[in-house]
Image (tube, rainbow, N blue to C red; front, side, top):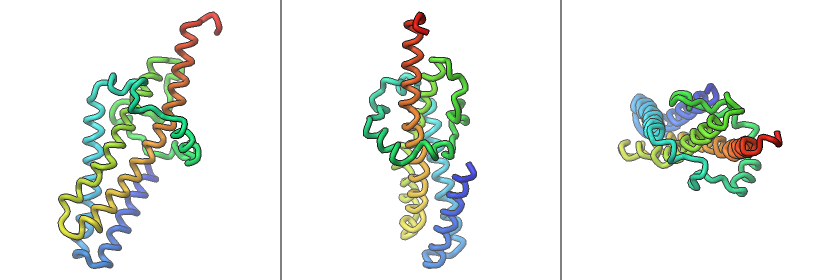
Length: 191
């Protein structure tokens, strides 16, 4: 969480300083616009998360092709070394009632299936945040839409891509875990 807040704070500072030095608006209007755009990003991301969290779990099941992770995706995640940094990504699923920071019931197929569903909800939440993060540009006047709202939206995009990659990296591993559990349950004599 500290890392994310640091990135956001540093980005806000850089965006503000550049706009003040370029004289795009008075310094206090720049600061207010940067703060409002950042708040708008948090609000939009939160609203999307609330809407997705209210949707029925059956839409996010393990067999939903929308959330399929291909071998090509897996190779990409490996080349991006997602495993080495995924635990540093800000995880706010606990606010919605299900934290994905660690597996609390590793021997429960129902829990693992719920974990996968929550990962899929997270993926959709972050993916919807990509384009919706650019919405504040419509409401910021003149050049500030491009010098303030756009850079804030780009930072938001980056901060939403990281958890998407982490969630999609974890999902195939969880699915394999669930498959093994179900196979063991079907053939208890091989245990």
